[in-house]
Image (cartoon, rainbow, N blue to C red; front, side, top):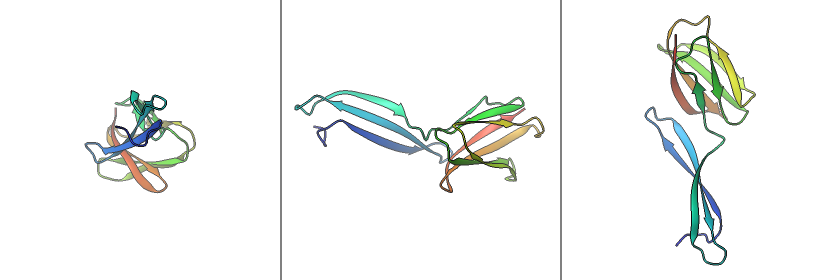
Length: 122
């Protein structure tokens, strides 16, 4: 039995290998009056965060889902290399002048680190 007996959307949040949060939305559609599930679908929420291409050859894109997030990029020894508000859903980051190596991209929402991903700059 599904409670409540109505079409419902649940958001599930889990932690990845680097203790980064990822949200997924599960939508449960019910038949009228019977309270039986007719289908379950998984949908990415707008809080999803993607970086591509990885490895980077001169630039990469940060896809942050919704505007209003901010990003910090640190090198392998933890020095802040880049920091910016993300005004768009997709932001192009130029890396031509960066030293080749491993960097950590940290996404913030309302000042809280919600996602961290490693990127390789070649």
